[in-house]
Image (cartoon, rainbow, N blue to C red; front, side):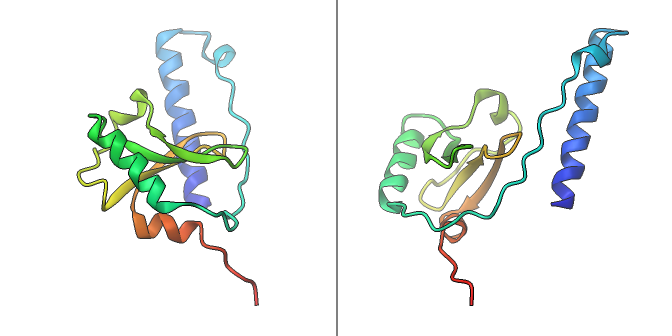
Length: 130
């Protein structure tokens, strides 16, 4: 969590600098910080992983090299594409049978992480508290 806050404030500072440069004297009038939401670990969700993998493969076969497993703020999930604004910073998926992007939009900002299918599935396994 500590690293996420550092990253959040870094990007807020970069945005402030960019706006200061683009609109001298008006940057403080333009910056509206996003609302910070704390998210809890994902609970057990029934996911048809074979169907998800087929969807990711279809997106990749369609010529888009950044397919993702998405989870939204309301907890809904599915497959989709990473926004064009984000792909400039992300490496493409070489083998969609081995790796995929996980795009988590539950907090105030979207975060895309490339991970293996095993790592992704581990995030959604239900853990019983002893």
